Structures are given as structure tokens and as C-alpha cells.
Length: 243
Image 1 (cartoon, rainbow, N blue to C red):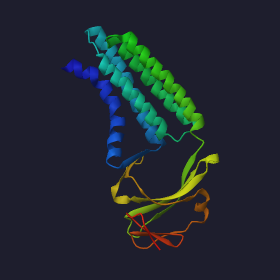
Image 2 (cartoon, helix red, strand yellow):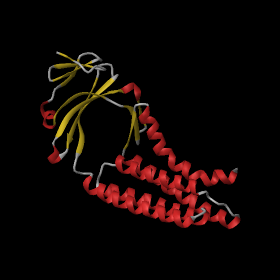
Image 3 (cartoon, rainbow, N blue to C red):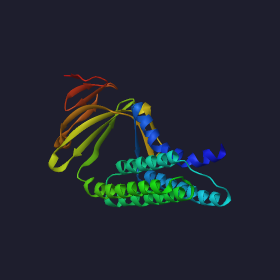
Image 4 (cartoon, one colour):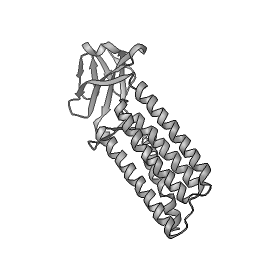
């Protein structure tokens, strides 16, 4: 049993991030990493991946441990999903995408080492892993150069009188494709801010307008349940506006 758990450890480790994000999304929560948070998680991925590779090499010298193909494929799958998650959580800058690509490439090299020393049918699995790595590197380069076409920025934040809710004016600029000004309202009671990562309930979008409207937009609160936008009242948790 101990050998099986050790062999399955890489797949379990790589599954933590994507599975956690999927579960949080199912329950209506979103996760936002800042730059330090992304770098911290990348460092953890690299360190643990290197540790797995070293452990696999040392164990191979002492005893014959065979990693099942399914376990190896699951490791590759979750590592691939994690790479994509990091890219989409990053802000789209070229330097940021290159850092993510370099760190995750090291993880893939470590996975190749684990497969080479442990897995059955290593040739087929290693070829598959290398192909996935090449595709993801190309995807990273594409995302780095084309992920910056749009820009989303928060231009104004205002809290309700009792601090229960927070309204954010967000400008979504998609260049030639146009854009929008939106107002999202967050429930501050359902937020967890750990500085490098923020977990919050999906906001209620109470207003959608043209992208340039944020320049002259006026926000005010009329109590904790009514947000006033340009002299028009919007009741929270309702799709109808009170005039």
C-alpha cells in the first residue's frame, strides 16, 4: 500500500489546485491570485516536482517500483490543467507568461524523469507528455502576445454605509471590439482575503453600460440594499431597478 500511495502522490498533488477551483466555482465562489500568490504557487509546484523526481530516482535504485500508466496519465492531465489555470489567472503580460511557462516546464521535465524511472510503457507515455508540453508552450506564447488585447480595470470602489456590501466600477476595454462599464456588488461577509489570494462570492452585476461611462458615473448608497447610479436606484438581489 505504501508503494501505491507514493506512486500516486504526484497526481494527487497536481490535482489540488484545479479540483479546488472547480469546487469553489460550483459553490459560486471565485479565486483571484495577486502576483506574489502566483509566484508562490509556482515555486511550490517546482519544489515539490523536483522532490518527486529525486525521490523516484533514489527509490528506483533501492527497489523496483512500477508506476501504473493511469497514474502517470492523471499526473500529466492535472499538471496540464494547472498550467492553463496559471495562464488564465495571470494578467496576460509577456513576462508573466514566460515565467509561468519556465516554471511549469521544469515541472514537466521532472514528470518525464518520474515516468522514465518508474512507469510501465514509458515510451508511449513520455511521448504523450512531451507532445502536451510542446502544445502548452505554444499556447503560452500565443496567450502572452494576444492575451493583452483586452484590459479590465477597477476605476472606483465604494462601500455601503454598514460595510456589508462593496460596489466596484469596472472598465472593460476590448480595443477594436468595444467594451463596457459595469458595476459589480460584492458581499463583504462572504470574502476571505489572504493578501496573496482572495476568495469571494461571485458578485452581483447590477449595471452594464458603454465603456466610456465610468468617466462621469456617480455612485452613492441609499442604505445597505440600494445602490444609486447616476440618480437611478438599483435594489440588490433583484434584476429590477427602482426609479
